[in-house]
Every structure is written in C-alpha cells, then in structure tokens.
Amino acid sequence: MIRHLSAWATLIFLVLFAALTLWLDRVVQPGEPKLDGSTRHEPDYVVENFSSATLDLSGQPHFTLAAIKMTHYPDDKTTLLERPHFMSFAPNTAPYHMYAQRGIVTEDGKDAYLHDHVRVIREARGAASELTLDTTFLHLIPDKDLAFTDKPVVINDAHTHITAVGLKLDKRKHTFKLLSNVKVRYEPRHP
Image (cartoon, rainbow, N blue to C red; front, side):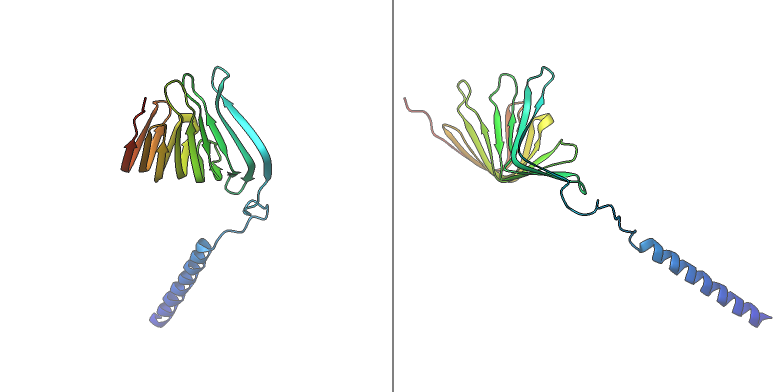
C-alpha cells in the first residue's frame, strides 16, 4: 500500500510540474502578431510644403509651423518633419523663428524636437538687435513658450557672443538660462 501511495505521489507531482511548465511557457511567449498593419513603421500620410497656425484667444497667431515635408506614422503616432520652421508670436515682443533640418512632433502635439543645424532667430525690435542661437538639438513646448537643450549653444547679437552647454528659454518671461561652461564676449558700440 505504501508503495502505491509513493507511486501516486510521484505521479501527482510530475503532473503538477508538467502543468506548471505549460502555464509558464504560455505566459512568457509573445502574443499573436496583429495582422492589421499597425505594427509596421510605414506612414499613413505624407504632406509636402505645408503650413499650419495656432491662434490665441484673441484670434491672433500664437505660433505657426511650416515644413517641406511632414510624414505621420500610425504605429508610434509620431510626425516627422523635414526642414521645419516654427514661428512664435506674443504681444509686444519680437517674433521668434526656429529652423532645423528635421523635427519630430509627439502624438498630442505638445512637444516638438528639432534636430541638426537648429537655429533660433529673435527678430530685431526697438532697441533690441536681432539675436541668433545655434545648436544641434532643441526641445520645444509651444503651448508654454519654452525651449530646452542640453547640447552646446552659440548665441550672437549685435554686440555679444556667448557659448555655453545647455539652455532653458522661457519666452513668456523673456529669459534664457545657460546651464554650464558659459563664455561671454561683449563688444561695445563705437560712436
């Protein structure tokens, strides 16, 4: 009788072990692939030579976006831009132009990432001369009028040349904060 009990216990243990092994195998296996095309990284639409504008509450342009080409990908819901040009407007301030070779806009449109030969130009206005900023990467948050980079930047206006690594630009406060390795050369006006 004890021999039969021992054999049954071993058999029950092996059956439970086999069931556990099958369950673990199913848990760790990847799911069935979707056959609807949503996993392919192929564009669902492409627009060439486009421009768009976002208006403020008074109906005036807040910012505009133009690009040579815009490509949207449904799998990750990103929008790629070729040679994007953002323009930012605010009352009583000079417009800002932001150019790059390429850009990425997130699904919700709240973030844009400019890459390669990024240039920001603040137009001259009143006593303030034109200001240019050059870098290789810029993260824009257009609704908040913010821009960030952790890359080297070069800033020039009529009398100042600045180099630094990292920048936080707050257009609403009319400020930019340089994050590290800041070097400034100032050349005063000659009458």
